[in-house]
Amino acid sequence: MSQYNQEEEAIEALAGGEFERERVPQSRLQSWKAFLGMYAGEHAAGTEFVIGPLFLTTGVSAFDLIVGLLLGNLMAVLSWRFLTAEIGTKFRYTLYFHLEKICGTRLVTAYNLANGVLFCFLAGAMITVSATAVGIPFDMEMPKLTDTTPNSLTWVIIVLALGAVISLIAAKGYNTVAKAANWMSPVIVLAFIACGVVALIQLDVNSFSDFWNIWGEGGEPFPGQIKYTFWHVVLWSWFANAAMHIGMSDLSVFRFAKKASAGWTTSAGIYIGHYIAWIAAALLYAVYLKSPEAQAMLAAGEAPSVAPGPLAYNAIGIFGIIAVILAGWTTANPTIYRAGLAFQAIIPKLSTFWVTIIAGTVATIAGLFPAFAMKLLGFVALYGFILAPVGAIIVFEYFFGKQAGIRSFYAEKTGIKFNWAVFAAWALSFGVFYFISLEYDVFLSFLTLPAWISCGVLFLIFSRFYQTKPVA
Image (cartoon, rainbow, N blue to C red):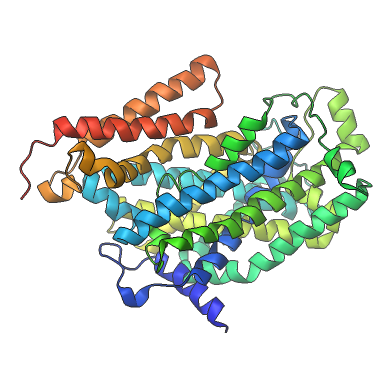
């Protein structure tokens, strides 16, 4: 085994469950190579097979997609580097332990519950992705873009079987999950590239202008979708992983980094998975849209299916089926495992195995409903919008707490169990901006940054009045 693979497996194993309530010691720190491999594998996964086609359904133009993704993904990398990695290498705590010091144990329990449930829904979407590939040999009817409920008994059986297997593997522990992902990730990346190349040939692309004209000036969104502009693409791609970077979830990973500069390694995963893979998957869908079946659906005012299995199979055959199954698998496995850890913080007497099985059961039930995958753009935006403002509490305390005259780690120093300044800041920010989104039909990713900043500022203001208890 190479030094590269040893470090990669070490960081993934450590992030799974060591030093949960203490600083990571100097002897256990890892080099940047460990993070490079981890992020390259994590962000070229099942979600990419769905997100790429969904961009086409929004009528996005070539400039808005290609340049918008460049800028949005750059902002995500900068967020990881200068916020998450900076704070992670300063304190070397998990997100949960860091929050507990600020918020108190009871408030962190509520956060864990929300985090775990949202993780389950995301894993459910990935089970859906894999099911679209498994169903091909059974001539299964694929879920449509507008489907919300199961459409056949075959679909239900396949999802339940997949969910059971994935949950059992996740319950075996993070080492098993990490090793599986390490082996599968290169295959998935190769499949994305192969799909993109084959799609370009099928689309008769012979020049850059031909490639550009696939999207051209854009068009009308498909039925049930909204029109995406340049800023929709920029902000959505920036905040697709908002919970991980500005939401500080990846503190648990970067606490093992020797230097904050390890944050730059996220660019490997982002530009392979969230740029090349998204565009390659969009090309697959562009090929399908030229088929008689898709044209007939469009003529009837229906949105053609974005089911990843058939799209990949039409491009690269059996290899495409395998790649989609593996892509959904490698995303669902660690997601279910992380959901289990969040639940275990709530019910610590239950073993890791059984809380992971519970999480897998919830994810499998969610996977029965295609809406989580077919509406993935909207769900990911909501996921980040809910969890990202919690990260602002950590960021604003670290960068501005001293200037604002508040005491850091107030819950730990005073023994309080529920920091009302934190809860009020999050609830007010979430409530106001979510109301704006619903009432005025504002794209949710437009409001993630304002809600995040609002939560941080309100936390500083409320803490000035709330922090009256003497520090022990």
